[in-house]
Length: 275
Image (cartoon, rainbow, N blue to C red; front, side):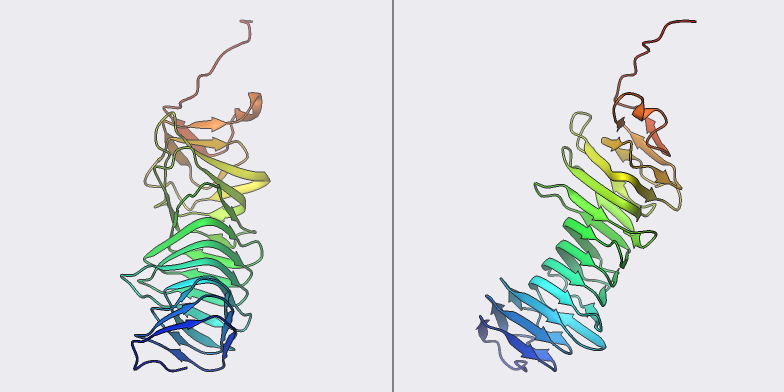
């Protein structure tokens, strides 16, 4: 499909299958329903999908330049790159990747949900996750990642050493929760904070085998956070300010491991007797 020479407005509401390229650099194309399947490249920086699915089913390199997708599915044989349309932001409701997907340098991408069983790499200048990342069996690597809360907790699931979020930013979000499942690596440039001593960001592990991996001590202490006892740090340590461990009774004795709570906001009581 070649709409390169037109600035017309297009609307599609049924299935579209293209074995070759889609070129619509100036045309405004809005998909209101249906599945769009593409075998090669997509150069349509004004394309917006309100409903349906967008499938990359190629057998090699695929370049994609679009503005808004409802659901992106990257096939097992595709080696796809989401190209930048900066300064505009690209938004994707859901990504299901079983092939290779890269967010290109300079891109500004906001994603609600990611399910990855392939290889996902981000060099985007702005990469925002709003709801969940599931990466139990894939490989996920980002230079940096911003967590942007809605009404629900943000959940991040890794496997064993295969989920590197890079430098994570989640700041000024008191009352919100981030749940980490299995092994998750974050960068030493990460910034985590709630809003105040009475409005904390909760950092929670899931189960008894969740860990945050660090290559060293983060440059910026976490502030106004409460860390549940089932989320130890491997490496680090991770220093916090105006924060506290969260657990019951003896759970907080030396837990969570490798977190340091300077100016802790909890009160400790001695209930024993002098011997």
